[in-house]
Image (cartoon, rainbow, N blue to C red; front, side, top):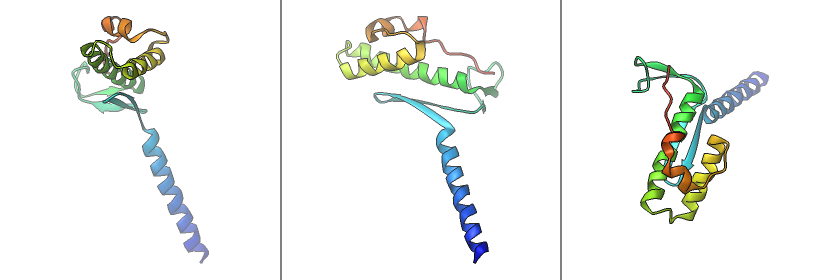
Length: 123
């Protein structure tokens, strides 16, 4: 009886550990319909951003590039609507502030994205 109880506890611990590990191994940012995700560990990728494909992408570089993609896409949508969507503008400003460390309005940020939104190479 003790053995069955012990095996059940071990099984539950393994399942919980697997679920926990699965949820923290990837992070995402969402602005409107645009979503960018990155792994919290280094991974091997095949990308035009690799000096030689495949290469290793560090978590901080994956994060930078994912957020850059999301901001570029959401800025394009904001520009197309002439910044009429206040909810979209606010979310762009929120993510941009976290990303850059500066408070800046969405129009100013999105009109000059090349100054900040540049992808980094992997490897």
